[in-house]
Amino acid sequence: MSTAEVKAKVALDLDADPQAVFAAWVDPSLIERWLFKSPTNTLEAQTDPRAGGAFSIVEHECSEIITHDGRYAICEPPTRLSFTLGVPQHFAGLAQIDVTITPRGSGSHLDFQASGAGPSDAQQLWEKMLANLAQLLKVR
Image: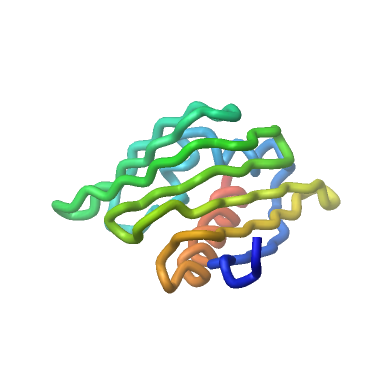
């Protein structure tokens, strides 16, 4: 993968163990609280977290319905997750999302990368979403 394909790259420390961080990426009830979440939308998530499994997140924003769909390529709890992401209402093609979670003290370190397709403001969008994730994990 060339550096030019990278749309977003974020590294952050989280106040939760790797199992809790991983769960936030694959548990529908947790996903609905941070991933693609805004103060004005509602989300419905379904996941089949295993290599080859699919996920779907339906976002309801006012009268608009935005679909976020993909397939898990790697699902190795609690350290590694890799999946495709398509959001046809926002960009053509598929993004490739790679997440690595490592223990760090009583918490975790998360390395995130989005490559391939994606919106021009992907870096800012992912930084905001991952800040939501950090906040969710603090209040669990």
